[in-house]
Length: 178
Image (tube, rainbow, N blue to C red; front, top):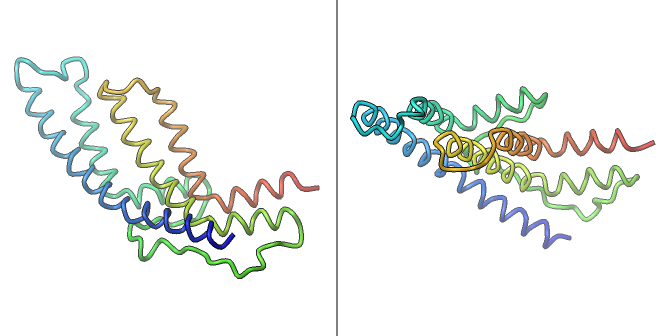
């Protein structure tokens, strides 16, 4: 079990390290794309003729990606959680090392203990899922993807659920135990 927890923690750390550069590079790319889109709207061969909102959407999503940690924190508060997200992997990423006695007194307590062991991985993966949901929604609005906007919302909601995996696991255990 220790090896699996260590492996998942290292994968989660990779996600936590790659998330901030992906957010900031994506914000820069969206800012440049918004400027390019505003310039193209003044041209006679405007590719955004049927979708004039695309440069504005790129500019708004640039702000979302530049402040992605605050955006996820607000989404967590809206979901009823108190989890504060940080894009600094040295501050926010705290893997748990098992002490050897992760078996609880009940099966429900054991499930929650195992979820706590993998919580850091789930949180980093959930943040990446939220990032990809935002980028997928942008591609959908530009017309480059055939994904549905509702599907992007579901992906974002499941990313938020992964960030709050301990709370959800405790709720599930309390709901389904007699």
